[in-house]
Image (cartoon, rainbow, N blue to C red):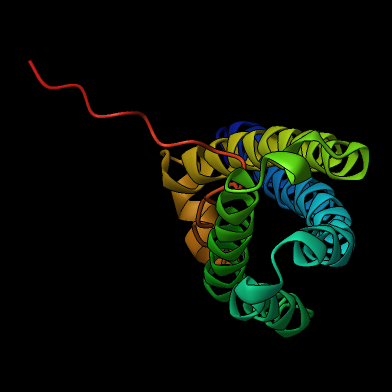
Length: 185
């Protein structure tokens, strides 16, 4: 036996434990991303459940705007499954734009804006969209941590070895998000 055998065994044991630790941290971040995504999904489903009530309330005041209302309910029925992240992001953005149109229609009807039912739905929508925003921030924070580990040395070698790849961030236009007014000087 050589004099280097204990050193080789020691280094091998250290490398084994470092490998296990890196692998486990990839799993931890991946599970955290899945958990954060479920938070986004729950909030989006809550928003979906508000849409029919909001549409029917606005519809009762704006009967001639029926095309916009049907577009929103059509968008809602199209977005059921999780699909891949890019598809889901595009579907949710379409729903947000359609909801934004409904809210714009509602702005044209002062009686509607003063209606207790509409105000209640508007407040509920604001709360849900705030939840979506917070859930999206938590999700993107987890994605950032995971992606940093996937790209950092030496964990990037482990990521390639075990097939861990970067994950994309989730962005979404919210229906209650207002565009900044243009200011010209």
